[in-house]
Image (cartoon, rainbow, N blue to C red; front, side, top):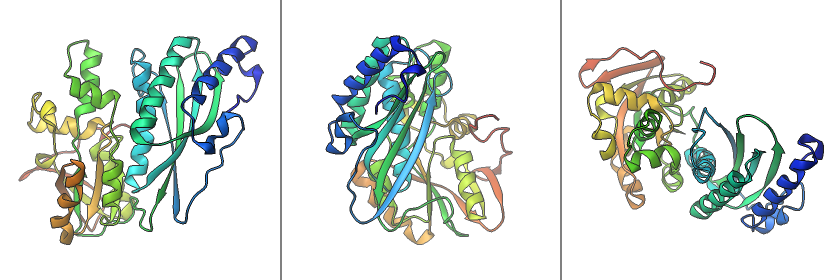
Length: 326
């Protein structure tokens, strides 16, 4: 991943870029990366379907300026792997887009954290690009995966299908809020915000059994509504069924708490549609991975999102989740 031009940041930063790439070589050990000495990786693939995704995270938008660099690296990889999880794809490799700041220590810690995350999720770094900039860091990563014949997307839900979520929601939003407030925050909630764990194995297990699937990145309500819109259907979601972790429950389980959890985002749970006939098999499929699932609603003919809390109809909040530029 040689830099595009020495003039991008001047000769003084070229050395920092070279040092950064040299550090990356220590974790980019897959032969397809070619030692990061070329401008492209060469990745052999077997028969099947390639799944490609690219997400960016921005300082002050997706992570706090004082978040540990190791955690920023982990999150950058994890949010992209969550997209692969929603397609039932096995990670094959990734490409990094990195903005070099003027803190070489931060860069070194980022590399260390990225190496840890790559090892944790068994995915090789294949290359990418780095540039020198001033101002907030903007980091990008492209993840490449391999999927089977059934690659679920948002368009496959049918009238009468159940709406499900795998995992819990709300932890990351609580963790972020507590960090911003400057108070003590339970470790589990901080970890959910800084070091989300993508449900890659669960996504692969579900892929052949679901009608539509997406990851919960912007908020459960908005991501469920997107599945409904893409499928040309209406969806009704029951707040009473929204699953919370034990750590989140300690901050409340009433309607207000569940509504906050359902709109917070950054959860990286999986939300999916499945035929009613598959209710019995779904929990069994995910049991080996320690991932719980909850039936939280239903798709029907029509359009839009409806919200209930048990028997009560609930008005939609002003924002269903996070949208850039909203």
